[in-house]
Image 1: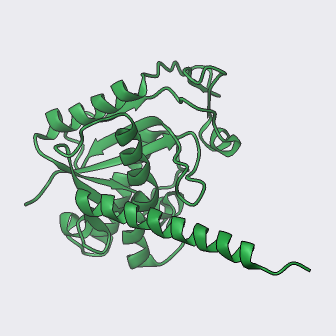
Image 2: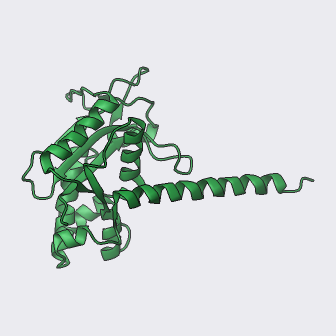
Image 3: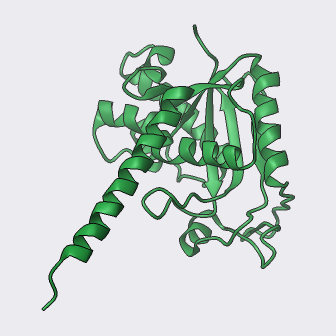
Length: 236
């Protein structure tokens, strides 16, 4: 079954820390369809926690002591963030209403960043998403298979002839990702849909959830083994 393909990007309060257990909050979601036939999606979320200094440096976003306001260093940009549950539900509703069936979500470094953070934030907010999401595709893995590293988005934009810096705006980055992936597929004579949905970098929702659960379990076991080895070390 050919599910609709949607490119998306997240801006967050930071990176994933503590061996994958400390998940940042989403502050912006941007998404576009495969062919530019649908209106793009963009929404801002209340941070709900402090930003990492590096995240503010890269994205330009910051908050105040309430963690409910969202500011950008571009003072001309008016931002009205919504509560987390409300914003995530609006995103799910947009997917359902726009595409009428579960979609394949594509992001750059999707498996280990965007999908993990999106699913975690939705779970924390008690959002039902299984009817809206079929699975995930990781364009970073796809590009590495074709070109080898490095394959971060800014580099890949140049590879395909799009000379601009990564915007770190979720809607704009989602649009740039779509342009990049479509050009990579065309430049390498790969049918677009087949390229995006290749099993090496595409997982169903169920497989994605299992993938993250297995990684979390391995991280916990590694941490436990490290603690045991440290306790067992002889002292002089």
